[in-house]
Each structure stands twice: as C-alpha cells, then as structure tokens.
Length: 323
Image (cartoon, rainbow, N blue to C red):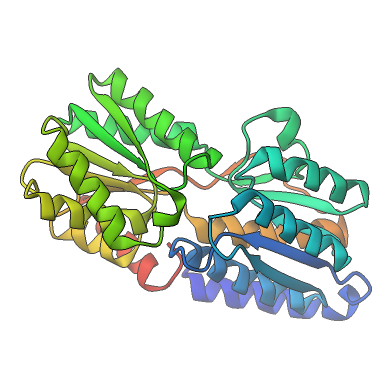
C-alpha cells in the first residue's frame, strides 16, 4: 500500500473513534535536532503526519528543536524542562548527551510523564529503561555494516568525519565503522570537527580536503550525516582525488542519491528517520490514551545500505520527504 493511501486509512480509522477519544486527548512533546540540520526534515515530516493522527483523537503535539549544536546538552535539558512546564503527558526524544539528558528525563518521569526514545539511545539498558520503547537504529550495527561495505569495495584507509564530537550516536557510528572496516582488512582515521563548523559547508569541505592532501593513503571518506556528505563531496573534488577516494555516508538526501545514481558516491546507510518519529509519536500517544504497547523493544528501522543496485525506490522516498 502506498504511503499516501496508508495515511488516509489511518486518518479515517482515527476519525471513527474521535468522539470516544476526546476524554483521553494525549498532550505530548517531541524534541528534535536543529532545523538547520537537513536530516531533521524527514523527522519533522514524520511528526507532522503523526500529529494529524494524534489530533484526530483530540490530542496535541508540540515539536521542539535545539537552535544549533553549540550548547547541545544544556539546550536539550532546557527543552525537556520547557515540556515539563507545559504539563505534557509524554515526551518523545533522542538521547544524544546522556549525562545531561538522563537526569532531566528522570525528573520528568517522577512527575508521571511518559518517555519514548527515538533515533538515538544510550546503549546502556539501565538508562534506556526510562523510555517505554525505542524506535531507531543500532548505531554500532549500522556503523559496522558501513565499514565492512567500504572494505569489501576495496577501501584500505577510511576517514570517518564526526561533525558533532561527543554526540553518543555519532561516536558510536564511527566506532562501528572502525570495527567493520578492521574485520575487512581496512583501518579508520576519525576526524572530529568543531560543532560550530556543522552548518558551514565550505569550512567542512576545507577540513576534509586538508586531511586528504595531508594523507594520500586515505582512499575512502565516511560521513555521519547527509549534509556532511555534501561537504565531503566538495572537499574530495577540490583535493583532486575523486578518481581514487570513495564516498559513503549515513542518511540520505536528494543530493546524496543523485551522486550515487551518477556514480559519484558509493553508498548511503538509511535509518528511515520518518518512521522513527512517526512511530514514536503515535505509539506514545496511544500508550497515554489507551495503554497500548508494542512488545518488541527496540523497534529497529535500519540499517539499510542504499547503492546503485536499489537507488530507484530510495529516490522515490526522498522525493516524497520520507527518506
């Protein structure tokens, strides 16, 4: 069933039970990354579509984003506290900075607020237990798959670009890339960029170019986000090594898929962010309203490697804002 048709069915089903649902009316907050980060376009699309379902049951959804990643942990805590002050019944949130977020989420839970994790968790069962469930990918498994793929394609030394150093999901991804590459006979060199450079395409490209010129043995670049992949493609071109250096990335965008289609990029690792936020939002509301739960925990939405062999379906998803 196509996505639009599926959405219509869900909305129609929700509308049928609207009268009965008015007495429940979940009021929830979804906390997300910076609007400057293109990855979160698909996350927001998932929340927007989920909001229609929640509203059909009389509830409400507040979508909150950090302004950037310069003050990441404190900004996330600020959003959690804002949600608490708004008397929400539930919070859906990734855990990117556990040392800052977990205490704040524990305080929210003490007030009876239900927590749903999506996109990123800590990997520590005692900390992740604060959430009802987790919708996302296993970053270590995804990274391992990416590193193994590049090694299988002939890479011997991979530059792994971490665009927000210290973010648990990105550090875990790069560690996974390292493990997967090592098993395939390749090595990985991490490049940790200042978080202030994340939205600076030219600055990121220049940093990657410098590494490639400094170390000619680097024959592959793995970025941890689609926006950084755009900068990496620019840096590879500026360094004049496009015929030698392979490019891979986590996450997708129209430009990433165009490069794969045109043979200018090798692969992308998709975690299906639309599904993460859509399922986290609707499942949290359903739990608050009706006590509904999904027995599978975690619910994994990736990884899936996209390359020239399966580019068609992925292009369709990106063009519709859901991949």
